[in-house]
Amino acid sequence: MSDATAPDDVESDHDHEHHHHRGPGYATPQAAIEESEREKLAYVMSLYAGTDVDEPDFVAVVDLDPDSETYCEIVDRVEMPNRGDELHHFGWNACSSSCHVEGLERRHLIVPGQRSSRIHVVDTKERRNPELVEVIEPEEVFEYDLSAPHTVHCVPEGKIIISMLGDADGDLPGGFLELNDEFEIEGRWDPPGEIEMNYDYWYQPRQNVMVSTEWAAPKTYYPGFDLEDVEDGKYGRRLHFWDWEDGTVEQTIDLGEEGLIPLEVRFLHTPESTHGFVGTALSSNMFHFWEDRETGEYRAEKAIEFDAREHPDWDMPVPPLTTDILISMDDRYLFGSNWLHGEVWMYDISDPSNPRRADSLSVGGHFGEIQELQGRELTAGPQMLQLSLDGERLYWTTSLFSTWDDQFYPEEAERGSVMLKADVDPRKGTLELDEDFLVDFGECPAGPARAHEIRWPDGDCTSDVWQ
Image (cartoon, rainbow, N blue to C red; front, side, top):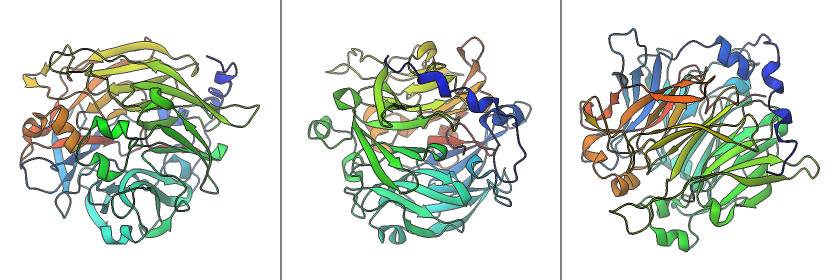
């Protein structure tokens, strides 16, 4: 590919010596790798939206300690006060971007409902027994002509910014909602009308840049996926690069037909880098983006391509549907999930301009070689990912969005999701399914639940940002 200077800024910040910090998180990405302990608990978004179970969604506390008697079990559940929220993505009140702020703790989870636009605050001071402490009702959100909260990032000094996918009526445009450190709505972060479609975002404060992606209007994707909506231009294909300080769009890149539905987006962890990746779900291509130093503008190029496959039950080739991606804390590996094909993959991105395939696992989905684990049928493909801070354990769940689940994996509503794990060898670049690890969300007391995003109490590869 064309950017000869691509890897120059990748290694630099990992070599910084660890300096003392007073707030949450770690001083550097390298410190996160070296100073963190193995994850013992996971918080997992769990929902009943779109199932026959008439119960509220919940945050599951999953035991990940192999030495524990309750290993692979849900040891606590934080139930939401209402039904039908469709919990989806969630995030922390503070991360490593605020490690210089004395007295701030990574303690509260901000838990939005995608369908309800209700925002919950969960206190994790008692890690195995977190509790719901605050609820922002939808009416308060709609006052700012926003709805359908998605990505939650903490930003320096303890504030929280949430990407919102629709207006108060579930139509376009979306935008961003800002909460203060008391979990009160501060207002819109962006000027209204700055973008039309919205989805995920990531920011690099040292570079004064934020990047955001596009899904569709809530009223478009809520009922399920319709290919005609794509043909009618109702799904996104653009990346927006923002001035982080001003909250305004400086540049928009149209990824074209090869970049339909750009979802999860990640900058490299080192704060000196302008390199990142975005997965385009429908086109199932990975794009690499970076700042061109000569022009100061961002560029994006297709870096990884996944091919559609013929299936006897489909009247068209089945796209992989690349839904989630993450980057290891040392910026060496890019991991991703192809939800329809049933594949988890890893690429070496030591040179981000030239990703090299390292390994993959074929599990679940419509094509996976492994369709059963411990006698449990795998009723969907790998979807949301989370990686241990040391890069040696990759976990995933299998629900995408309730109506989309029902279309592509209808049996998941009856069987529930699973959470699985692969052991990663970063030195060899290999993935191996851990056949002893299975968390079955089909066995929840109220009935089978769908499982979505995963968070560690001490921060993780998809929520920590550095200044």
